[in-house]
Length: 129
Ligand SMILES: [Cu+2]
Image: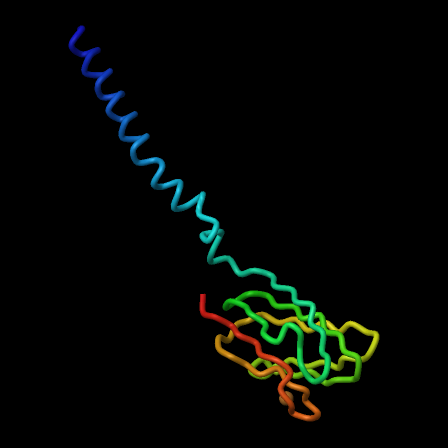
């Protein structure tokens, strides 16, 4: 009887030690690491983009595959914005905000251009997930 109790106590203590020894590893790599957020979930990426002097600010739009991207575009002069690869386009007029939204289902580097002059305004960079 006594021996059984001792064995049970030892087993429980052993499991407790194992639990404590293994726990910090699993939590620090999963829960505590800020770079490992719910990583593979597509995200919404909203960008406020100002077009000035023939260039976008920011000049580069970054997204990961399957993210939902929204560009809120403003410009001091009328521009016909065209996102290559996605064939998304829209007119941006002074004093107005134009929203272009798309799902980033193609990866790569794509030109964003003024469709009228064919001058490059900026770049869309979609990384594979
Ligand atoms: Cu174009």
